[in-house]
Image 1 (tube, rainbow, N blue to C red):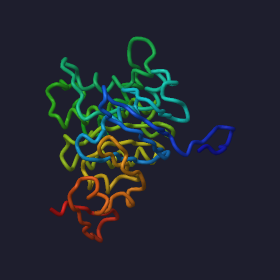
Image 2 (image 1 turned 90 degrees about the horizontal axis):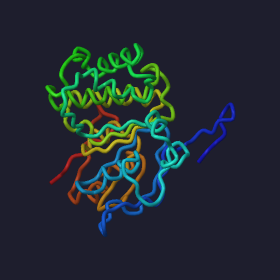
Image 3 (image 1 turned 180 degrees about the vertical axis):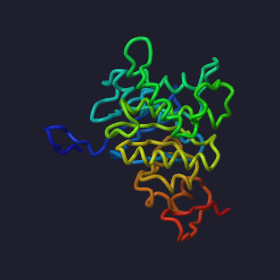
Image 4 (image 1 turned 90 degrees about the vertical axis):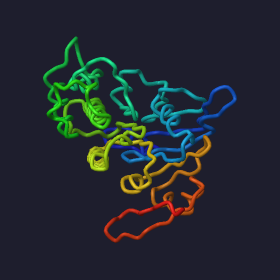
Length: 277
């Protein structure tokens, strides 16, 4: 849906539109006729059991794979974006990023600036943004550290800084309206404190207009931070709705084939759901 905005610009209510998306290998469907829309500025989570198709779906949304049907980003077919324009429009953070060469942490973060670099070297602005992004993920003292010497959680926080400087053109506080961040179980290797640190930073970026599409396994993180939830099971979309509509004991039992129960906690504003078996 599109409404008229000031200055004659179109304002999209849905930043991503997916219609009849299908993908597979040989005769095995990995994504089977999936259709949905992602509201602008939402934190949109994709959940489901192992092998449901969550990561495959995300790869189709961000353009790493191509299926039949259609994917639109910002009102334009995904295939209609140039690689540089798409790199400025959306960033992708997978669960694991393999870098086997001995890069400094600064080099890894500055990789996110490649869509903006003019000439052969990064500018002072690029380096300033990279330093600010590392501070935002509590890695400010790691600028000259060897990336390959870091723990898995530390590497993931560096990668988060990388996508942060990819999304922000000139300032970390700028408007991110119309931009997208895709995360594929990106907090799985982090301890609880750093998981919540990342999500609190995501909520700040969301207030700046960023839309976040996030594959998750953790039901409580999904409940605490998500606005909308899409459920995958057996390569199909089982449901897609607002978080409180999806995350109920009855519906989670349909997804995971095991009972759940909801525990009331007056200290929280989100549902607290636990497996009941």
